[in-house]
Length: 162
Image (cartoon, rainbow, N blue to C red; front, side, top):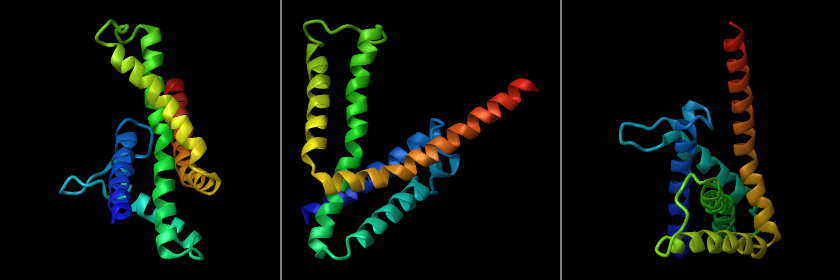
């Protein structure tokens, strides 16, 4: 039951991340739309399709084994986001865009370093198969972002020429 709860939680997180990326211009706007109840319908459908494809890819495993692998893969796909956030705190601190840690703020500075180290350690320890499948899951998102970014740059260049 713990794996089911974990998987449901991660699915909701990924749905919200998809909406956030879309609202901030990183993904197409269609992925940022929410239904009348505020649920990110297209983001959840997108992640649901990816999860279903992963289960189909692992049809030889037992259902429990496939579900456990899926939980690990979903965790692995979120680790780069956590690493990025932890490193962002350090980069923003170095640039002077957030206050330098004093005696009281040193906790979040140390937490950012420990979080980045932990995420790298977890990525290494997660295992080859889940890590490769996490890369497969991330690939469509990177592709969508790249295509959307390319179209945005082209649109800006055309607008600048006009």
